[in-house]
Image (tube, rainbow, N blue to C red):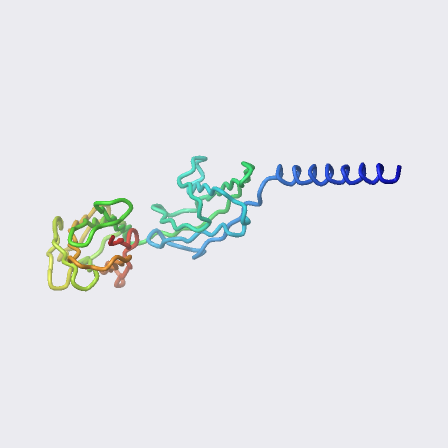
Length: 238
């Protein structure tokens, strides 16, 4: 009798444990995230980190403007984002765990304006941003002037030996020896300036990820301006 009762108790314990596990699995995950910097402007990439949501998350969805539509879905807890407009957008994160349970969390972020809004975009033959040695890819830089500035300029730096060919420069002068574009006049608010250039990767370039950096410089009414150009900045040679 004791042996039979003992077996029943063990079975009951297993049922209770299984029931508890089922209950835990049914609970929503803990959505949480941090971001840096805490007070960006429209030309500063913000890093969002949802690692504190836990290790069992299978999907992260981000709504960057609070409109209820998720702008980015990823399996990585860390992402970066550029805000096109100033203000105090509500950023919402929805996480989904391995059992399909979901939870959302929202935080407000203060985004300040700037003299210009500037972005770099890379168009490569192989997506995403990959190119073969000996071939070329294209870079587009778009500047939206939000205030009046004097003699704006852009300079770009590519890996040593890579060749830049200017395709479109608007009203700017192109100085090939410095990979620089310069306007010599005052530019009014609301003006859009776009430069386009091709980059040829030398044959024999080792497979690796390479960086492109650049600087926008100008003067506003009262002070000089220097902005590191945000947006695409890596190209993978395969």
